[in-house]
Length: 480
Ligand code: TXE
Image (cartoon, rainbow, N blue to C red; front, top):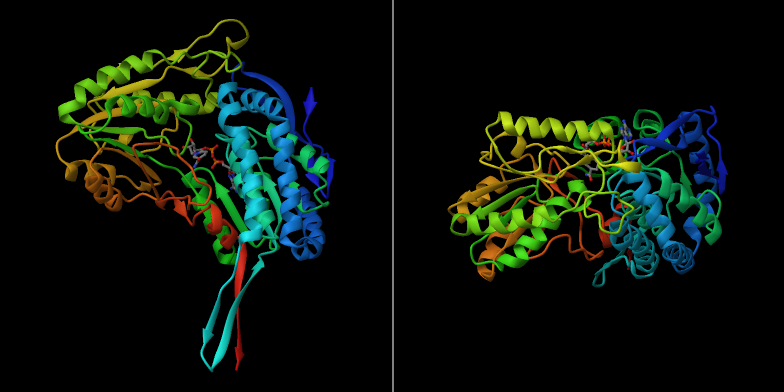
């Protein structure tokens, strides 16, 4: 059976204490590999390797750093099918989704930041006859990147690539639930000729390896994506050490559908924004608010679409829905379905675990689930479920839709469907949401700031925001 190894100082090494954790394939419920259960000693070793690599890496011209990152991107593209199969096996997502989204995006993260490093400019402020002020942006040093299980390689590289591009050295930990593609990435980094110690990938649990990254005094910043509770815990540990923090946390995103929308497009895209990746994307729109005059029409077409979402073996080309990531997560999502019944919701579709046959008989499958009749203040409409469960709610006025949309602790992403341009601007500006999509969903341009308001996080990733995060500005003034 496959035993993954840590990538430290340019080499693939076993964990210092020799302990391993089982890694389960969600579609089968069977252990298919073991991953290092690393601890503070492994992290200390990785930090030492990163510190040793830092002086040369930060002085390497941005063009040369960029060339290495672009090389990693090319290798990811070359191995797209192998990486997509690994991602699907490890996470339970349909292999077609990993081929179309996860792996291409991981490659473009490296390509984008590899070239972005060359376009990153600092400022000068000239005071006529008095002084020249200029700003230098120094790489922060050694930084920590901690990522979740829902979009494993996609979100891992989204943090690592800008950190490396900015001239930082990295100690990174993928989720212990989905470590496989991060391990394959370490092999590709060796092949690409990334200098030893520049990137270190250490596997292990959150309380073990993750906590050791957050606590290590030589790590200057933490870029984290994951649950809001974990984010709180990390902030509590890191803040007294004055570490820079970027926290991308949960969401409970509204999808607001006005009567003047293109209904067919709104339905098709809402099916994706509800159920893509089994609803396990922090950007999924799990609260669908529909203007009352088209509520029944939307509901009928949406439910017809849900009926077409075949739940099946993620490796089969025809499967639109794969497995949820773990038995524990499936149980959490099922508990919210039970809660939706208790809170008085009417089940319109799904609601049950799916029992497949053959290889997938013990997998973690769930029907795409739709409820109506739940008030905007009930727990199901306020708490992040992070699974294939959405609610439909009719609204009467724009003011009402906005109040409900903003009525949660979260503020990550929102979608609006309308053909009225004035309304699109008006509603977008009033939404307490870091990202607003009008007549689309999950449309990404890597230059735009990515992140949430309220309990959805602190800071922004993407484009220049990410390069700014991983650098420290220094202002220098020369008297004329
Ligand atoms: O995430 P965790 P979990 C939400 C979703 C989900 C819930 C919990 O609602 O049900 O969070 O998921 C590492 N110090 N999202 O428990 O624990 C951990 O090892 C340092 C939203 O899987 O937050 C992993 O690498 N690191 C989300 C990463 O943090 C720690 C995506 C995320 O794990 C740590 C995933 C610690 N003390 C879940 N404890 C999104 N925003 O996309 C854990 N980790």
